[in-house]
Length: 155
Image 1 (cartoon, rainbow, N blue to C red):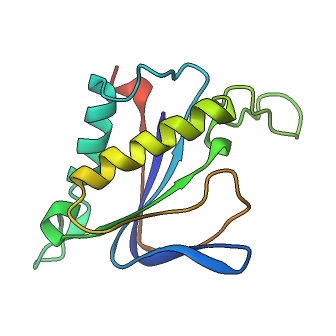
Image 2: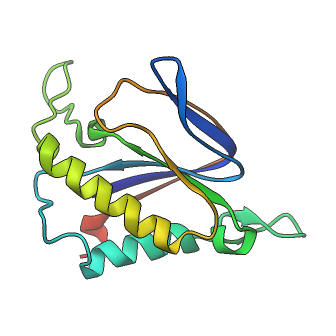
């Protein structure tokens, strides 16, 4: 599982011209699952660690302008967007290979469970894109601040 976490002052996801999810200040998170991920991932130690790490990252500024506050501290929102391209391999040629990404049916289930678990722990609202859809994601990367969490780093 990979998470690309970006601090945002707000964002939204549109599908077919309609907004399907929007948030205020908080985190814009791209979520991807790899072929090594399976149905045992939800509820596992690494699963819980990544959720706690994401919500607890101290990447919001305090009164002195230092990144010292977490999403919990500011009561921020989370926008989760599934993105299989996080597992793109560009080792050969110019066309990315996506063979390292989880199969769509499994990824959909994992994404749904991830969303439910994040929603249960998030201090603010949780919004999502639409799995498998062509989405327009619009947000301001506030800082900019971008953090990548990969489950292989926490196993």
